[in-house]
Image 1 (cartoon, rainbow, N blue to C red):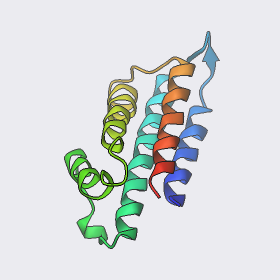
Image 2: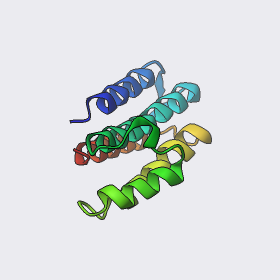
Image 3: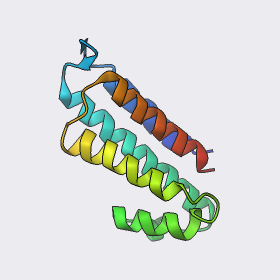
Length: 125
């Protein structure tokens, strides 16, 4: 069970709770960006934990998004071919749109992406 990853995801939700909601949108994008970055990091932690449990050392863990893509294909696609597509979607939604560009403000959208992150983490066991 990816305990560390779930802890990061919980931290992301706590960060998100620091901003007020106005008209179903988060009022302060800073907290949304920070929360999305932390949720994305939770996904990476889940992959790291899985790879360590498969015998990789910390030095062998991926250092880039391309490295994570490669590791997903090499170690996880045999179990679930959809994981790579899910990772790509979460990368785009959490890291790019949410964290990097700050484009996610609607509460329903952010909550849906966080739910998808939790589902992804749960699949990596």
